[in-house]
Image 1 (cartoon, rainbow, N blue to C red):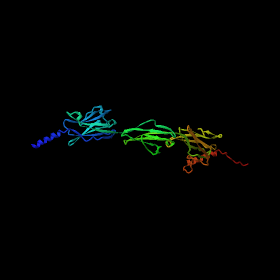
Image 2 (spheres, rainbow, N blue to C red):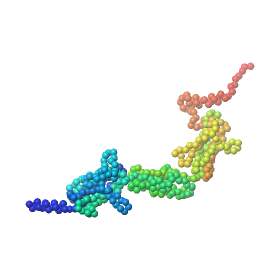
Image 3 (spheres, one colour):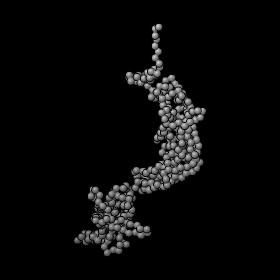
Length: 384
């Protein structure tokens, strides 16, 4: 009898304890489209207490809440605030309940995380006949990781004069906040030294010709993928002319061509022309049956470098002369001199070779000799 009375007394003492939330709610950090979890552990729950999850909405200094669940039931099942169901048919929110002796854990699930799902969530215990200000409550936070995006500031092409200064700016958004670095696309050193610069603003001082080229702003916060933005720097300077080979030889009257090649660099892009001496003066060469000019450029060249070629067709004796590659812009001019000279045999990659097996190569080599022989008058003898 005494044992029964003692048991009843202990039960009344235990059941009279106020429901409470124990342990802090740990922050959950997840990427977009993952599932967020927040754990709320309650004790001393009785028939008059229910556990709720709510999303906290901040509007300036004011705070409001939107209830998401009551115990293990989602209360926004048909609400637009919940968000639409995805392909798997699972709702936006869910609650799992786990019991461990006197502790009950209510786990809030936030599926298909979007950036707008980030923020604070409140777990509170609603107790009947108790003012809501006395309800136990704790706050947990979901952080939604967002890959960086670069906010484009200004133009993607900058022009500067030699000796001037230039400021490049780059900003980016992401969660967590991204680190911003600058580097050159070609892997060369930056103007201030080093191969990488940490910071949103890159200042180039006393600009030189070597500072031209593409500079890349990279934003990285360890959330894949990082973001990048390329800025092109063009420096105004006088042109330079460079002969690939300043002396070129070729045999005459054998239907072989000779090619002169010139590299021209400058900004703004120089006006280029080929010239040769005629009538004791330099004359501009135009495309015709004897000459063919071409202009090439590609990523393998420097940013402002152009590759110009002059093809001298079917080299004849009067083609042996000096030639000039000339270029000019508002900042200056340049020229490169070439000499076309006579050789005894064919020069260049297109010449036939007797070392190559096959009758076709031999015929190709001998054919010009046959044509040359046709042009020699025939000689005969007569007996008088």
